Image: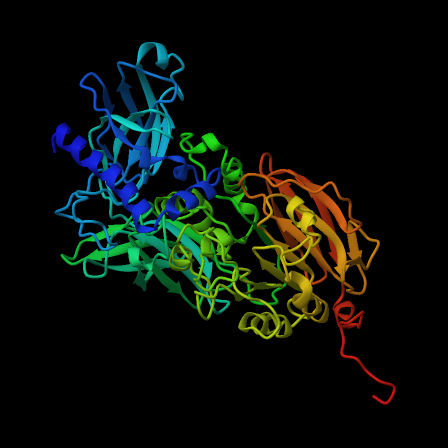
Length: 627
C-alpha cells in the first residue's frame, strides 16, 4: 500500500481506538490509566490526546523489510528518520500489525460504526528519537536500532512529536515482516501430572484447520517418535475489561501442548516442534533438548531455582524509560549462562506484567525461551495475571489489566485439576512442591485449603524429605514497608489459616513473591522464632522458614525501618534462590544476586527421617494420659 494510504489508515486507527476505550468504560479509562501510571509503560502513552501532524519533509524508514530469512525468530534492524522541527520529546513507536481496516476487522466490542477503519492494538514498544543520537535536536536526523521478534504479524514505525502525553504523528514507515510469521516458537516445558511426563507448550499462528501440531522427540541419539499436540487460543471476549479488551488487545495466535510420556529418569531427550500443513509439507522449529525428571524419592543431585515478579525488558532499550522492570534481563541472562547447573525453575507469579497489553506476552515468552525450552518452567498465578473486579479473584483489584488469568492459564501448562484454579502439586525427586494460588481464597473450608492440606498430608517424608510451599502473595512474613504499616507483615488473613498446616505437616520452607526484594526468616511458628539457629539447621523439625523472593526483575520494594527478631536477612536488590538437595538428609539453600550470580545468603539443613517424625509444638495430634 502506498505511504499516503498507510498514513491515513494508521492515523484513524490510533485515534479512534483510544476514544472508543474512553467511551466504552464510561470514564473508567482515565481512572484506570492514572492507576497504571508508573506500572505498565505502554499505559503512559496518552493516545486520547492524539493529533495528526503529517509533515511532507518528515520521514521514517526501516532499512530491512523482510526478517528471519535464515529461520531467526528475532532480528536487529536500523530505523532512520528526519524531522524538520525536532524536539527532545520526539519518539518512535512500533505497531504490529502495521495496518487494519474496516474490510478486515468487524467490530465486536460496541464500537460506533462511524469510527472506522480502526487499529485494534496499541503500540508494542517505543523509543525516544534521541536515544542513540544525542545531536538529533540540532540536526533533525537520527537513527535507532530496534530488536523485533516474530510475533505473527507485520510491523510499521511511526514518528511522533509532543512526547507521550500529547502525541502528534509526523510520519510513518514502510512495512516490515518475518519470512514465516506463523512459525512454531518459544517452547515452554513443564512437568506433567505423572513423574515420568514432560509437557511442551509453544506458540504459532497455525490453527488446527490449517496444520496438525506435534512434537518429534526421543532419547538423544535414538530413533525419534511423534506425539500429537492439542491446540488452544482465546478471544477478545474472553478478556474481562480494558485495556485487555480494548487498546491492549492483540490476536494471541495459537498455543499447542504435547505430552511426552514414559520418560526414563535423568536421561537426556531431544525434541523439535512440528506442523504438518494440509498440502503434506512440514514446518519445523529448531532442535531443543531436556533432561527427564528423577523418580520421586530418587537419591540424586537435584537443583531448584525459585523467584517471582520478573516482568520483561527489551534488549534495545524500548519501554524502559520508566525503569519499570530493570532487573528482568539480568535474572534471565544469569540463569541462561548457568543453565547446566540447575534442573527446574519455579516462577511464582507476576510473569510479564502485561497488564492487559497482550503483545507483551510474546515478548516475555521469547525472553525466557533459553531457560523454559531446556528445563521445566513451573509458574504460579500472581495479581498481575489474575486480579480483576467481579471476576472471582480473592482481591477485587484491576491489577491484571482486564486479563483475569486467561493468557497465563492458556499459555503456560501446570498440572492442576482446573487451570482456572492455579493450585497444584509437583513431585521432583526428593522434593514435594505444593503450589498455592494466592489470588483465590485459601482460608479454612475452601477448596484450595483442602487441596493444600492433601498435598502436605500425602507426602512420604522418607522418600521426599523436602516439603516446600510456594505462592505469590506473602501469606507468611515480610518486612515490606506497606505490610509493616498495616501491622501485619503479611496479606490480610494470610497465615491465620495456613500456619497450623505448615506446623502439622512440617513444611520446611514457604516461598512468596509479590514484594520485590529478598528476605529470610528464622524457623517460625506463631510469630516466634522457635530456634536460635541462623545458618545451619539440624535435629528435630520444629518450624518453617519463610522466604520472600520477589526480586526477579520488577521495580524494588522498600523495607520497613521497624526491626523484627524473626527477619534474619534482607536484600534490596534483584535475585533468586537456589536449593540443592544432595541426598535425603542434606539441603543447601542459596540466595544469589541477578547482577553477578554470586551467593549473598545461605543456610544448610541436615535432618534424618526420625527428626521429621518426632512431635514438636502442634505437629502431632493431642493426646491424653488415658491414650
